[in-house]
Length: 238
Image 1 (cartoon, rainbow, N blue to C red):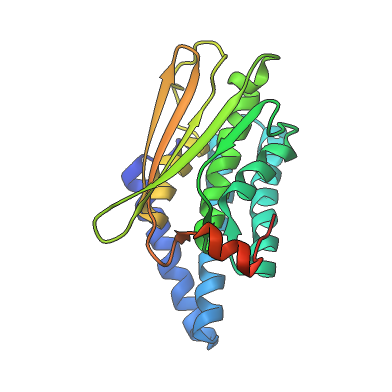
Image 2 (cartoon, rainbow, N blue to C red; image 1 turned 90 degrees about the vertical axis):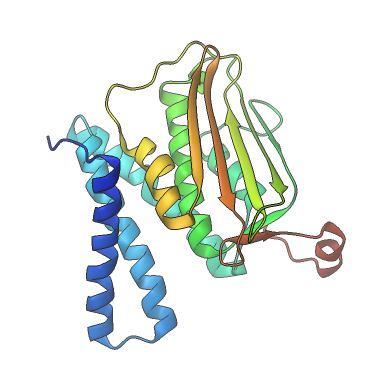
């Protein structure tokens, strides 16, 4: 099996994919808006297929993980196609619910109303899928008493506010950093950085995994919703 790419090679491969797709779509004469959307989606799919193959131990694992990742993208794509944006709370609760992790039971989800643009929603949905899958296969969610807490806040930043999101798996057992760098780590470390200019820190604590993300909430990524204005408009995808 091919050795996983290191971080620099992974970023270079993502840039090369985007460059090749840009040339192909430019030659096809697509409208700018459609070309941009197709390029982003195709580059992401290519990266998912390639990295899923590199990190899989066997064909069955490859098929199962690839199917889960593509389903995560399909779910958020249907939301953004319908509403134009995605609600962060719904993005998290939907992904957990697919794996039968229910809010109010095994999951606690808390934070202000934040809406995400389509591309940012797809990237973050994939990151959440990797965290959820890992929690079920190796972490706290594999245990009867296991729980997950997902919280976020919006903090003042430089040119844009910062979305600080934390995933924690309390009531678990000690976890260790994996020997091999798999697809999930690549998403959380490389794809978030490349696509959203985000920073993430993975901490393997005695009671479970902790992932802290800092995502600049620029206009092309998303925004915090004024709750009173949102209530009056009635615009919600829950």
